[in-house]
Image (cartoon, rainbow, N blue to C red; front, side, top):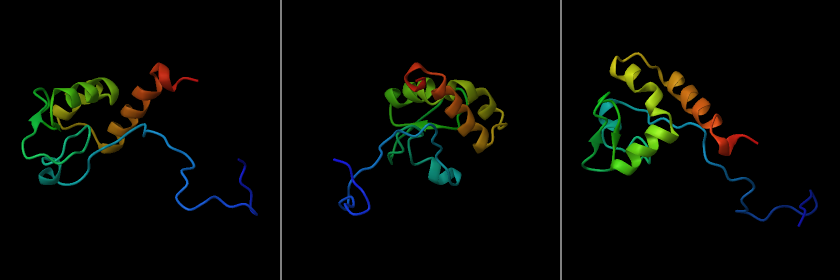
Length: 105
């Protein structure tokens, strides 16, 4: 079905659905300490990255996915030294995902 100006989309119709190339949990340290850095779920007990101690995860699955899919592997050392700004983190995540096969068309 092709929709035109005289044939508008029904309310609630999904036009485009896509996963983000980059995500970053923002806020103060207290806010960030309550949510998983990968899935953003609020948890009472979170595991910290053993290396940088700056990001937290609900479980090993989220930690592994953040390491491989979101590029945490590329920024972990900089986070440990507190040398990584949010815009740099987002850029690294984007480049990491774009370099993966599923984003190369």
